[in-house]
Length: 116
Length: 114
Image (cartoon, rainbow over all chains, first blue to last red):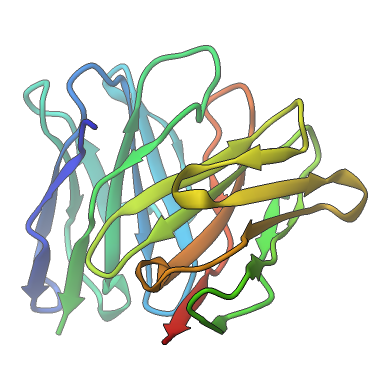
């Protein structure tokens, strides 16, 4: 089965530093997502991306966050100035363009971000 | 607003015993319901989904779930668990059309004892 790849698997950073989380979605997919899971809490939607622009974002996705698809294969999440509360597992997901949304979301294995 | 409730944070069952994980949802339109499993160090893997038709849906790894509209529930079941089923299980709800996000429950951690 095709896979969504995320790197790194674990990232440690100092508060206030910028981090970039990287994802390689499945090659023929057109919709891309970032979700996060703070330890012990539910998986939360952050942002969806289609046709090179954000299609929806949550309240969590403030000005400190940005997404980019720089080269047609990578999909990145940048946090400009990390805060302690940004520590979480970040999941990338992608799906094909189909009439039935959510037909199948493929999730990556996640990047565990630890902000010290 | 849509929401998902998984009332059991942690469940422990013996290997070979039956399993039922509870999920209740709140959604204004016809829901599209999912169960995902997350093994340690792994991503979220889709077990099964429901949007219409037979209210009992079969998934991978021997799991099934039953949609009960009157109870707003979508409980996950397995007749006989295996040690490899130990994982975190998430119920989620989404829209059928549009680009709407999935809303997840808080998850249920399943422990299997020999």
